[in-house]
Image 1 (cartoon, rainbow, N blue to C red):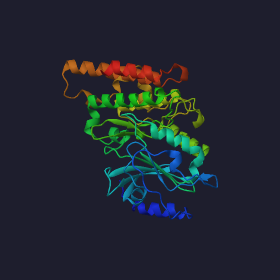
Image 2 (cartoon, one colour):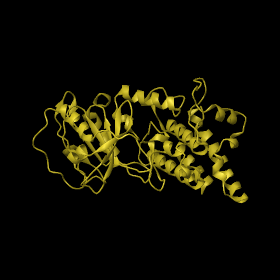
Image 3 (cartoon, rainbow, N blue to C red):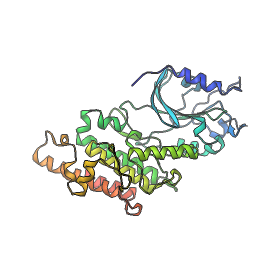
Image 4 (cartoon, rainbow, N blue to C red):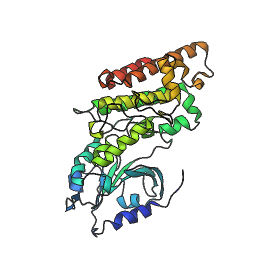
Length: 354
């Protein structure tokens, strides 16, 4: 990870395009703030002008100036934004995860307001919460989240971490992701579609509990940026074969992506190889595809899972691995209608692993 200049540089750029900044600032209020009251609803070229930090649960002590001036480093980039790790000096939350969304990639603030309010209300032990939100008069948007010190699931699987070879930890991660996705799909009258579920968007804490990030983020992006997100997902192997436009993302496309993540967990392999065949029903490494076709899937799991186990323990773990393979393949069915829903997926995982 390469340290980059302070977020103060980012602050200067952001304020440079917000040339009409008000001198008078509102006093910070403790507790959760009403989103409509927190915004100065003045239209500027289709954007809503604000200089306040919109606070949700877990963000009551945050101060916008301290966040924007915090030293930090870039830990991720995409076509639509930049991810920062920011270190605060005067805060009960010393480290934050900040997502800056580029103005050219996002929808107008008046359209984004209800989405932000909704995302800020979502809470679950396996979901990354939105603690605060900041927007400027030219469309600048900053999302504030907790920081999780063990990185993302893709790094965990492929960076040689010995814990990734322990079956109890793999089980914990698989169940946690399923429970978080269940909350998204079933906790409200209308399902919350993730739209970009992949191992890089699963964050881990020091105990390897998984937290799903970026859920519903595509709703804040304009059509072009959202489609670029989908194309990146396809290139990385997580896109359901029937999904053509990001706006058509649905529960079944999330289930497909989850099936790919399950295969990553038990094989330790990348979802795609160097030459994915676009005519295939789904993209998997060549060795995995041939093994599945030849009904040799038990040759694919990571052998370290069985190290140090007694014969009886090996039998139990192998049974669990086979069950997860079968569930993953059902989730990755080429037919959207044949994929299990999240309730069926979670029930089956709990049956296999508990």
